[in-house]
Image (tube, rainbow, N blue to C red; front, top):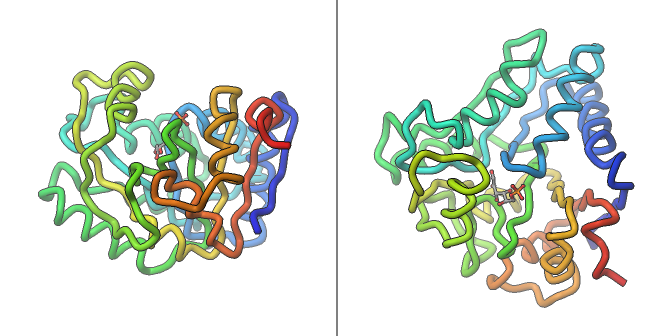
Length: 239
Ligand code: F6R
């Protein structure tokens, strides 16, 4: 049974950041999987502020990137690694944090996925994930099952368009690499971050609809320690 935490729209990002900071204080050597996107951006902004106040110690944490586009050049601002560095990692003091990006420049996609999976297989204490409008988690697009491995995937149209339209990629990527559902379901804790009224329908499907590969996020309900951190706008369709 998922633990549902509904915050006010204005307190949401701070509430998530405070909870993560508290976890880092308790467990400084946390191995943490992080997403990028519009949902976590304000959370990262708050985490940087908390870090400056000495309240979010990342110095001993290990960060494992959730997913990455294939085919975007290293300087493309929409790259997940670039975005996470820009919004969080490069702003943390004191560093360093150990950051495992996905080796899409050095390795062929299948080899990069395998190498990244080996990193995640060392264990994830906490996986933070966002929710796609089509129910995807990372780049586990609809059709992904609970045993999906970490792999290179074809991106759904929505994910391709988001890269250019929302995240400013120079060219529309067609493929990505993602931690698989199996790896995410193996994390000790999973926090699903959901904000914005545009997510109300898919959040309802995720939490109340059938548990099915049609909505990969619904598969997270099989995790014994799933926590959904959301805000009032996104919960409009939950009774
Ligand atoms: C990004 C990722 C995606 C996003 C999802 C929601 O690393 O894995 O699954 O979490 O598409 O995106 P936003 O937060 O931009 O609405």
